[in-house]
Length: 229
Length: 229
Image (cartoon, rainbow over all chains, first blue to last red; front, side, top):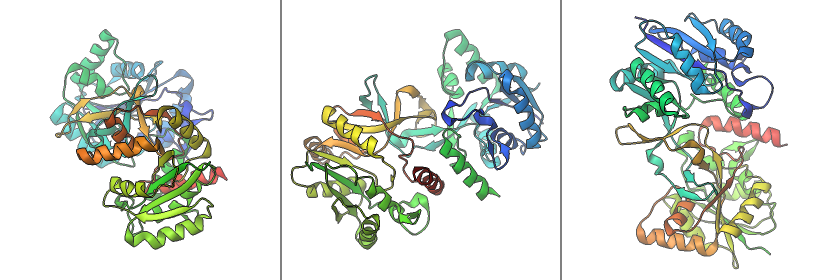
């Protein structure tokens, strides 16, 4: 049974990392970040297809990243959009036939881990939508436009969410349709599902499932890679 | 004018880091984390005293960390309590005479930076309370006891707050008095001030002002140190 499609939006510019190379194509341990990310999806039999949404100028780099990853799962390159949600909206047109679950994953989270993936799949089948999250270590404040604190939400009730976020196909498609009609923008896909009123289950993520955002994160990534092997 | 006291609660066990040595005493670049942290407060003339609250069993380690830091600012060791707030409550009894501002700082945030410190002091004088915060890069969800999402606060309105948190002496003392009377526990000091209804200003923190929580953070710390020198 190959009934899961994975969508990876990789069209962002990644300006916070500095440098000329977009973040998914920066190399760690000799391979582009994206190659490491693709490998995370090569160990679950149910995955039918990985869809990479990239901007026109990065298609050659993306092709090279696929080749150097050596993955056996089919990977398809499609057009990325101006924003993350646009990329995913386009990728949704390309999911494999018979897809029952869709995983949406950040291109720059190269250490998902098979065990987390399997737990997310199981949970998405039960709840319709499942996402990984970690307890928050810093205190989080909500501020107003002047930088004054409005509230300090109870830290134990907060989760810093990661990807992959996994959804039943019908739910994610409805959420994107609804978001387009209402003009909703959001920082993750689960938010669009929440707008529909569907349940979203947060399960425990893993500390090594980091998103590479700042230059320091590349050191952390190298450390995680060294400790995996 | 020496009118600022700094309180550093260092009695926590730091179980997330693993290993036998409490986090403030783990070495990076040959020095205990706490020594690096103390050095952050050696470059602002107005600082009268640094008060370290440590548990009985760590007093020798604390004394060694002070010596190896080589700081010129006076450092006083006082008794830490069972929880962070208890340590700070005790340290408040030991602030220097004539203290107009109190900075509370995590023992395991060794890279504050003089520039940030000066901005915080200026802002605390203006607003009464000032804390550093960074924009949040991951999406944050609030969940219920079953792990289901309750809400996704607008990410652009969130700040992940750091220390030092700087307060006018009268405000912080009132906040601790009020918290004791009401039995309020919180994950940071600004929260106690918020309970009083006082303004708390969040100013831009720095990415290198990290809290050393997980083993991977030590690598990040080494990277930051290498790039400072």
